[in-house]
Image 1 (cartoon, rainbow, N blue to C red):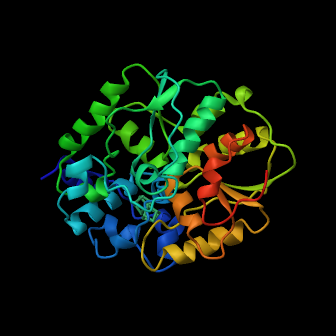
Image 2 (cartoon, helix red, strand yellow; image 1 turned 90 degrees about the vertical axis):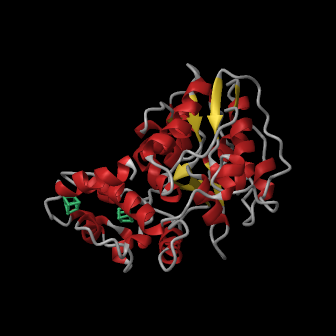
Length: 327
Ligand code: SF4
Ligand code: SF4
């Protein structure tokens, strides 16, 4: 029995039944997960959880998202995947992945970038754009050697926390005292929680805003950090403004990931929220993949692509399904 599974009862015991988690849960609103029921031990609707973390941000007493992820993993009861055993990543690189031919431009190893499974396997042009943006800023960066999945718990029900922490810790050891930057908020959330210090790209860029160029013209931008990076919303808005864009002031939300019966409704809400924007700028590779695959959706760019484009590199934008307007 893993340590997380033992501990979830401790998190559950702290629940005071206030219902705040339900009130803020986008999945519950759409008939999906019932966080309060899961906190009470009924896991039957946990597959509707999109992992957005709203429940934990609202909860006055405990950390329901930890319980949701652990309960999801228990219900899924899936052995560690062959893809992970073969590659260290949660999935194989898709042969059709857009941007697979774009070779990232790594210039040195002052900073390590941990791309994460979705960026590496599904939208590799995001990794290219990150390398190009950092190169433009004069940051000597390269990909973290032999990085693995961040060990987001859902798909690792067949592995206990100590084993997961071993993989995370090895990435921290490889980085040594170099800054470690993730492209996905979920990766930085999990890795920091398990003792490996790293930073999402948004705060990394925000701390170096004076290096950023300006885009000519005015692009109206919907700022969508992604749910795991939502705490960086203000930083991301300032970065976008610094680049010369005009945020449209939308309330950000979750793309819905791949949760059946929920994701399409949530994506429609996101598209509505972005209706005044020329382009949606996201801080999450999963959001990038989801928005760019939504039929009739707004053009979308991962934040590093906006920075790379400001330096004149639009190569990653050519990989999108939904054409991005000229900058
Ligand atoms: S918000 Fe927290 S304390 Fe309140 S019902 Fe939900 S889990 Fe329990
Ligand atoms: S993580 Fe999000 S979807 Fe899951 S229970 Fe919490 S609020 Fe609901």
